[in-house]
Length: 265
Ligand code: DAK
Image (cartoon, rainbow, N blue to C red; front, top):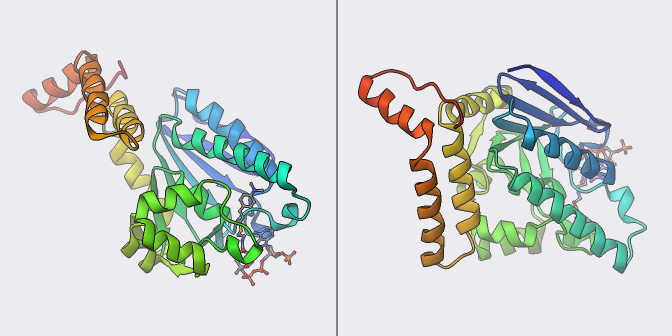
């Protein structure tokens, strides 16, 4: 396994000990999501998805103020009906790519996660917030609705009524309220955010790689199915994993009281 980096214009991406850390690096504009950030996210996540040295991805923002304070508002001046719709579809495709990359993506929300920034966090597998974080969907104040999945992922995560409250009022909520709503999974002091991300990543790394991928596949593929067909998806993945070398290793390690050594096979 080798440590390395992936170079792009607006993102930093370092890979170390099977954990990739992706940092949106535009702190001067609170890591606003420009069209170039989307291009770079697409490139970096395409690489990470197929990189055998990467098993968990941490996604955060540079500096101490923002995860991402939304879409880059300066780029919204020129949008038309046609370009607005196509930019939205492009954003959907790239956030879906993040969501379905087959590896857990942990959003480390180190400050503002507003508008498109909150939508990006919603497309991640888990969300860990610093106690200083502020989240919200203020798009209606700009005459828009969320265009990167927020109207769909937010109600699925926290329920329709709580989602509509955020969408209709644009209110910014603090980390404690986000935790209460289930919008984030944990809140920690800002100074401990990265460490907590690494601890969670380490817990995931201790699991069998194909089983981690299987959990993601079962949950995401089953999410919008009726229960019977979703249970069918679970059985198929369970059957597939039952025949793997790592399943044999996991059972043997338990019975022989030692730590399993995963091969990813
Ligand atoms: N875009 C561009 N620049 C931004 C920005 C943003 N979203 N947020 C902050 N900045 C810039 C500021 O303009 C400022 O730049 P300078 O003036 O220094 O050049 C710099 O970052 C520092 O910001 P502030 O000086 O304002 O910092 P404060 O601490 O005073 O305030 C703040 C922090 C987060 C409360 C404030 O910056 C703020 O209200 N920012 C905007 C938050 C927001 O409304 N975000 C947009 C949400 S709407 C679409 C799909 C999706 C979307 C749009 C289109 N399509 C498919 C086309 C999504 C839209 C959204 O995300």
